[in-house]
Image (cartoon, rainbow, N blue to C red; front, side):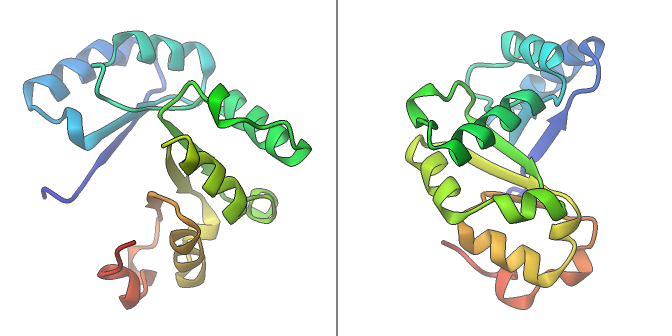
Length: 152
């Protein structure tokens, strides 16, 4: 499974040390992304993670980033996380754009998406073409054939 990457979504500070130790013991630092929706947990993850493991921004940071982008005040130089993620539902689906993804890519950031909009072939295809790096779906059976071998 060399082509598979793993996302660790921490729900508790107590889980961090054991997960970090397991990742390091298995030499998987280049195949994982760490993060937590909760800002205090995310900060604890940032402090404990190996330096080469990307950190996904917390929920509050992502909401602020999206507001800044929509208001025209976003700057990639202000980004402090290596990865950014969005839950793509009916509301965020309308707000996400290639322009936002391009701005994040300009800052060399990873874009990860999950949510109900990615449980359709059209949603997976659309966000892959917009530039998302990671697409999380609950419906692998709907992955379109053109995405099974698609590369940017």
